[in-house]
Amino acid sequence: MQIIIEITTLHGRLALQTKDCCMQIIIDITTLHGRLALQTKGCCMQIIIAIAILHSRLALQAKGCCMQIILAIATLNGRLALQAKGCCMQIIIAIAILHGRLALQAKGLLHANLY
Image 1 (tube, rainbow, N blue to C red):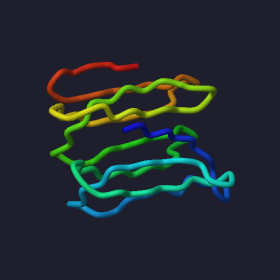
Image 2: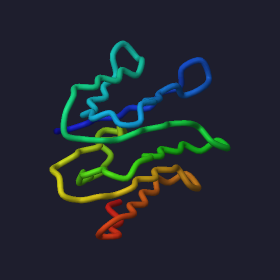
Image 3: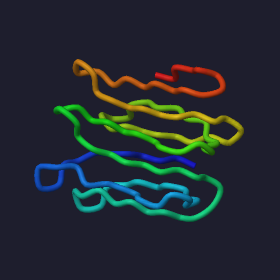
Image 4: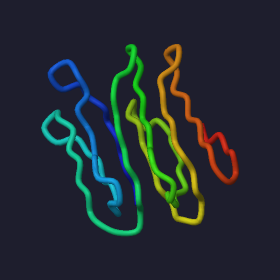
């Protein structure tokens, strides 16, 4: 599954929050008419995502303990592309823009830096 994330600010703040604690979702994020659309489609992934702008930085915090995803993050045409390619990897993702760069910290079984 391919998730293409384009992050925009709505009314000066980023408002994308999924707030359930045991929700199995597959996220497909696309931009529709210049605004951010979140479509949750239903099975195989337990994630809780909270996205906020903290101190002028973009923080993506995936909170939970049973996430099985393999992520590859690349920039495609100036947009952030998040591709979830399978299962069997438990990682906690923190994505932040640090000093004008995108930093991906993957903490889990492999301690991989996929940036």
